[in-house]
Image (cartoon, rainbow over all chains, first blue to last red; front, side, top):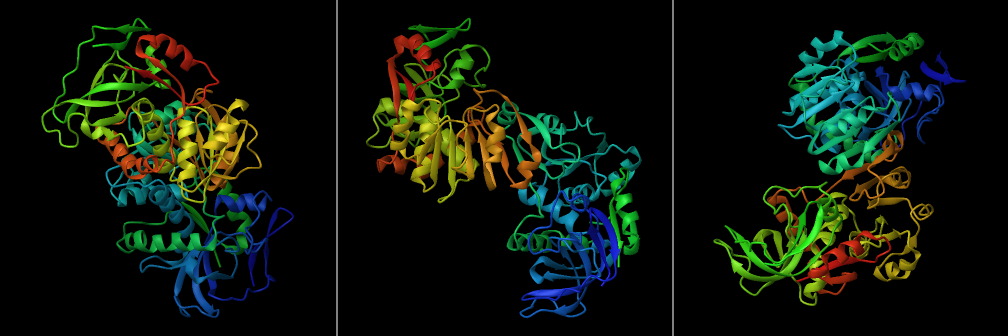
Length: 314
Length: 314
């Protein structure tokens, strides 16, 4: 089958990868689209090996497509169903086997290209701000790095569940689009003072942002760390954290075991897919590339200054 | 009445403080004993003013005594009842008015001197490790600074609810006593490696301990920061926190509003006082001083190398 593959820390497009076979509880998905994510870049560089049970040489943490094969014991889906989901790796290939409990149905109104860029970002955003940080209606959410995939998902989810949202991006050209997605205020990363205090801060940049994040917390506020492209170390003022009874949460989806990934998929089905069906959430797409142009897609993904997802289509 | 008072950042013992009057829902407590806490020292230095509604010049965050007067609407206690509780300040005086919902009954078997050193440390420990950090039976708890008041409370509570406890103290002379309280391992602050990973770390020292705390976390582990005598700033490795999906929680009791303090007292009545009645928890007392010797008591409290609480008696 055709697949994006990693060899010697370089990307290739291969046509002779072996087609995977579905095992117990697994389905074979003919992939239509698969989004790119930061972890794919790390994996290509050799800095972030695939978890056990996932293909070592095919990147891709999310996919959308059509069920074309059923392993023994599959009960949730049938041949021809439109599905999407998070995988431990191997999403950027023509076919992928996925345990059926990791998959969600693609809601009516979401096309398969957009669906390929939906699972990782919307699950990450929902899990981080709602499940982990417990964002409640009426609370105030700050999203740092709001123009990326997880950021645009978080702005929309925050707004859709009744929070008010302040978004930051270094790129002024996206201010209007972030306002359209539901941000009440869009500003630069170090200019959020005066718009808080915040109950939840979604930190997609990391590094020295953390100090100001903690200063901007309301009593009982939570900073949830999902991205660290801006630096992995930060100074934390413990007394400032204590004085607001604040919490700093680190989270990541990729390393979680099957049962926990499945739990995030069920939470998405309950809480987020109905919002997609009602037209409250969209998947902003920076650019979609045919899989043969994977190198160009990765190069585009690496650049700053995009709005939304980079997606490969098969 | 007789009270410990603060004037010009110095401690005095005064015999002419006005006796407080109980208001709606408040009781007048004749104080028998009142423990010293770190915040008292900060308050004497002028660095930690009493919260609104508490006496500005009388320190003391906890007390135990006898109900000798009832304000209108009091229903939980009657004259002569033995009570103890956390207060926003003013505990180190012969009489104190306290809202009845902040008070707990003193369980049979706990004398009033020990009871005077019970509320702040045991509530802080229980709230931090059980309520905030969610310590569960079978989990592994690390207590840094275990020989102090909150530390000895946390070691005992952790053990009594079915966790296994590793304790650190700089003072080897207390190792045997900490083992007697239920610590499985007692070691020095930087020598806890090999005894983890830990589900909950109670950080009573702060500062640069934090880096090692995060490294020692199990997946889903929580570091709860309650004391920062070792430094208020720390470097946090965000990627390390993400990789274990860890959480750093800051907490403090003193600044909480009445309704939240009352909630902690109800949680103590449900979960901790039954353990006292069953003889599972004791209050280690470093030394009790008559209130007239408050200066000596504070001097003793400031020294390191104590085991348990310093308590003033009236």
